[in-house]
Image (cartoon, rainbow, N blue to C red; front, side, top):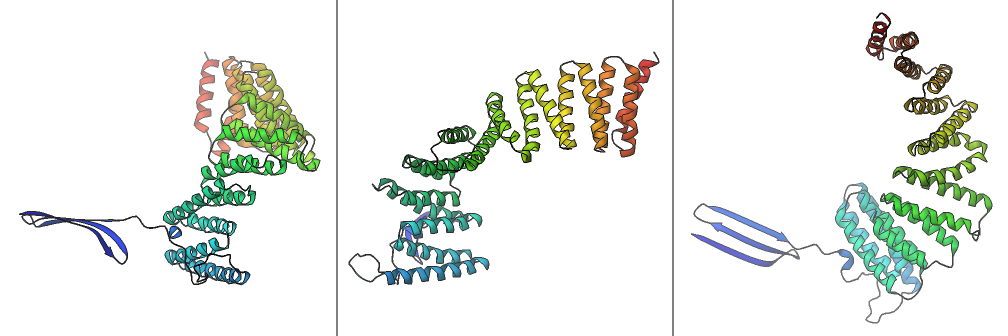
Length: 412
């Protein structure tokens, strides 16, 4: 005997459920499926609170009423923080939801700022349901602000910041783009908004859009219409160039990277405190030129980087530049130039007591001598590498094998 029972909209403790029950008496099996209706967002329920005026006439809150509400908001926030510290997240957000409704009574700006603050707490505690509730309320406020005729830049800025706090980058970008459109007559504000947009695009790994933003910022500086000191403009320009250099490096655009880095090099050259950064930049520039097969310019920048690093006694940086320069010559089959660079590199690594670097350089020397069939010099280089390798117990077998191969050639 089989039967099916279906019950819908069963109210339990104010929640509605749909229940379906199947029973097969022959096999004595019962299957029960209970589907809960979606939970209502507390921020979309009718607004009521004991602190609100009990009147059917809609009127602005009096200063005294606002003061009472603000006092209660502070109290609720403290209580919610205490509940959260005890691990009672549900109880904490029940208090914060009441606070948010009280903030709504004060005004949009107060509510948006509170939504951002409390939303950040929900995000850091992985409370996806509460985060969704707050996001839904922000979307409603966004629609109201966008549809309003007044040009309320403060509200838009607060809304964009709130979206950042809840990590909704896409919605934040939409708001800041709207804010940018409404700020055409304020260049300094445009600059601030563009800087924020640049960081947002970087955060979502949209490097093409980020590059567009930082190029706009450079153009804004070039117009000389900003009410800023020259020192601030110089610092800003350097920051934008550095961001662009990083972006172009990331998605491998050497031509654009070179244009930016050459400008950046001029900035570093003017400041003695940034000469080490200049040396690093020269290495990066050399790699860009090398990727475009412009070997002369690559060599020039490696040499400039090494020379500058040595003048600053930055031996590790000088070694890096010379190592890459030696590899460039080696790959281009310019053995004599490569040998000269590696000999210079050995002196620097000896000064820096860089034993591992010396081992690798002796290995490279040995390989070049081996390829040019200068077996005596190859044996000397590999033997020096082996002596250091034994002291460090590093690649001993490798050098023994190399020496064996060379000796076999010599004895033929």
